[in-house]
Image 1 (cartoon, rainbow, N blue to C red):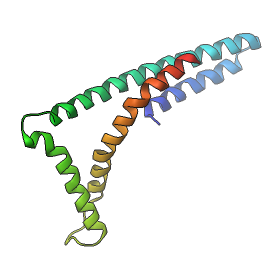
Image 2: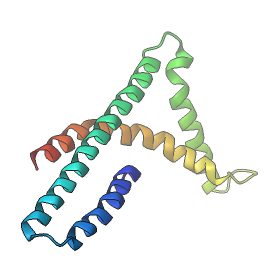
Image 3: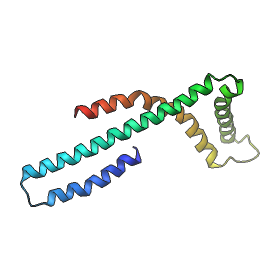
Image 4: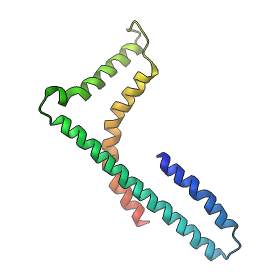
Length: 135
């Protein structure tokens, strides 16, 4: 889960607890809780919209590289990821004269995951936003 969503929950939780401790009617407490949930949902929607724009920008960069004039411009990311994949596999099989640092595996996960997660998030963000608006 996104750290900002966690932060929103951490901010809203103490305020919700404070609302519960207020000496008001149950109806007023419910209205206050509903207002807090609405604030949290709106902040979440804005976060999803921002992340959608960020994903679009990243996708635009990758698209521009893929459609570039130079062979190297179009191919450097896949070549880099395949190189790291080959190194990680060779390391796992004990074929290297040296051990790869843990960061090599992390870089491979980020590089490959960026394509998969980015594309998935790009597809599901509108659905999540629409669902949040219905509630």
